[in-house]
Amino acid sequence: MSLAGLGHILLHFLVPLLIARVCARAHWRNALVWMLLAMLVDLDHLLATPLYDPDRCSITYHPLHLWPVWPLYGLLALWPRTRWLGVGLLVHMLLDASDCVRQFGLAELLARMFD
Image (cartoon, rainbow, N blue to C red):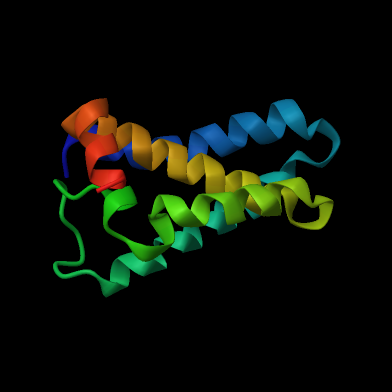
């Protein structure tokens, strides 16, 4: 795995930690757990062949990462009981999108997303 790949995985832990510490000071551990549970969205990678491809853009390939489901994640973030899960899912999608932008550039990513 490349250094960029390791950094990407690390961000999936550090960004939720930062958000939890800043936005849910009194209950940051609970918020962090729910945001980290959002990483279970990556179970859709099990449907892919090969299982891991460093050159594959998650948000244009895996079913739970495709942009049409993002509004559902946004709705989860609006409801207090599921807020931190929804925030975690949105953060996860944004981090994966940023990885795709790094790989392919914004124009190519948008073309792939809306093709």
